[in-house]
Image (tube, rainbow, N blue to C red; front, side, top):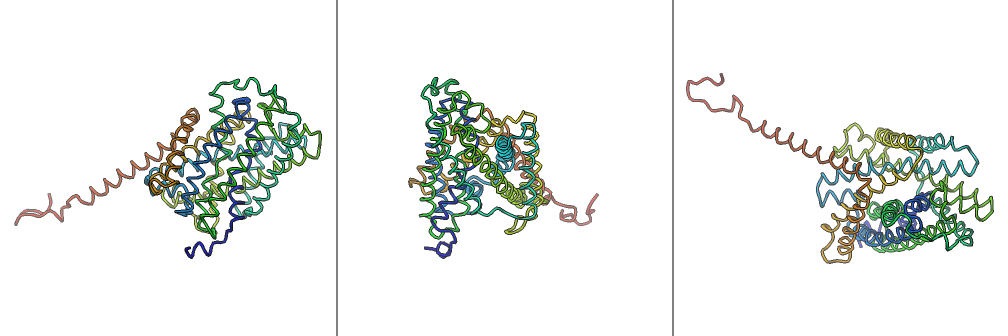
Amino acid sequence: MSARTRDGRIGLVEGIALYIASVLGTGLLALPALAAEAAGPGSILAVTAVIVLAVPLAGTFAALAARYPDPGGVASYVRRALGPTAARMTGYWFMFGVAAGGPVVAVLGAQYVALTVGIDAGAVPWLALAFLLVPLGINAFGVRTAGGVQLVLTALLVGVVVTVVWAAAPAVDPQNFTPFLPHGLGGVGTAVVLFVWAFAGWEVGTHISGEFRDPRRAVLLGTAVTLVLSGACYLVLQVVTVGALGASAGTSRAPLLDLASLADSPVARLAVGVVGGIVALGVLNAYLAAFAKLGASLAENGDLPRWFSVGAGAGAVPRRALALTAVVMTGYFVLVLIGGLELAPFVLVHTSSMTAIYVLGMIAAVRILERWSGGWWMAVLASALSAGLLALAAGSLLPAVVLALLAVTITLVRRRRTRTSRTASSRPTADSVPTEPGAPASL
């Protein structure tokens, strides 16, 4: 056992807690309704499919985290296996594609608060703006929500889900499951892409595995426990949402609140609304901090203007990159408002970008992990499944394609500049050209 492993600060229980907190989150607040709108009862198949996909995906990240702990995570593995252009793509997909989820979380939190308190729907955009501005101000001063607090929020959300499912289960009507595929298999495919939001976060272990006291044990058990818990939560909640709410499931702005209402308990509805709002705020706080650090790191590597690199170091506050993050999310927020608070397109941009990241991450894992090992086989399977998922996400891949082209263009421009510089430095000058005796040194 290495010294780093012995000196790690995170034990098994804390490791499992971090995995659960990274995977479970705001998806529970909206995905059951969005998936029901896309696929009807067939959304249950979508949840099952994503759970199956999550097994090799999570297993691959667990193998990477246990064998090659690297705080850079996916981008570091991609850079090592596929080179700087692919790593730049990965960074851009995170910074400018996955960031589309920020306004989605803000609107979700605002809707839960508005519906709980009874505020007019017209105030939701203003509430959503507040959900963005408050954590933005907190991060500008360098304050972070502690991991323990994030874990408590996630535990509260899981507790609310259990309570809501228990209360609404008696209202499940078998008739609500027919027709099972009202929008065909295409609707199920869309729901599958939506549910990538729910099962993103497996890469967290690659960032923090070096801090575990026993990386292999903590990473593997953390992955297994989180797979079971998150899969069970989403699957049971989807069944109850469709079975209890029926046709109205797809039009619900706050499915957990609607399920809580079936219990005829104002306390249950209030608890769901309060927890939903608090969880959204906590997630945004962590969200903005992570993206600000990412932006500063990209600038440090030359993938963004160097001006944004200030604050990239440990303990420093990357205010310039935070400002860039605010601009990106504000742009998406304006588009959300223009679209009438329709969240599904932005969830798809978020999840499509994550899917593209996972495809490169799994290809990198195939090249890095020991050939024919268990982790290698999982990476091979996850690569194929992720590629299939990317095909399902084709309709929302335009932002990811544009960002990939930008990354390639930067590489081509740099190579051209390098060639030009080398040509200029190797070109003979007047002083270096040998001359015959008596001949002029220059014209």
